[in-house]
Amino acid sequence: MAVVGTPTLQTKAGSLPAAAFSGTPKVASVAFGSPFSSANYSVLVDIETTGSRAFAHSIVNRTAASFIISLCADNVTGLVQVNWTATVEGEE
Image 1 (spheres, rainbow, N blue to C red):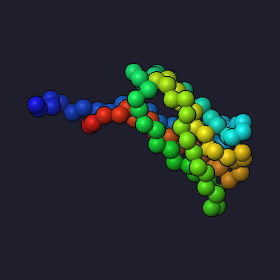
Image 2: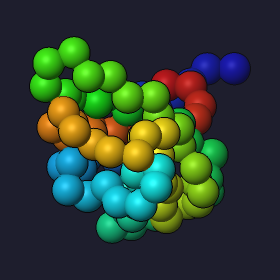
Image 3: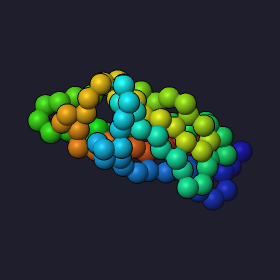
Image 4: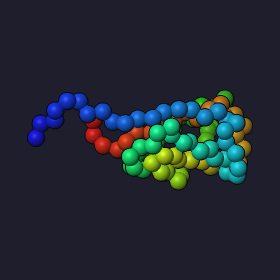
């Protein structure tokens, strides 16, 4: 079967400053201006820090309209910002 045209994967992206994270562990919510059609998307996270500070992270409570980034840490000392990209799962 031939594919007609060039399929395009839906992608949304943004960034969160350190001040957006609160609670214990530190978490921040991302809400899309317009939701995906389902929660079947992947999230890539790039964490910018000062010095050699590193953060483990996880994505929780993923819905078509939002997700939460948990930094798996109780403080954000050294965190500059968290960049994220959400892409619908599929083939391009």
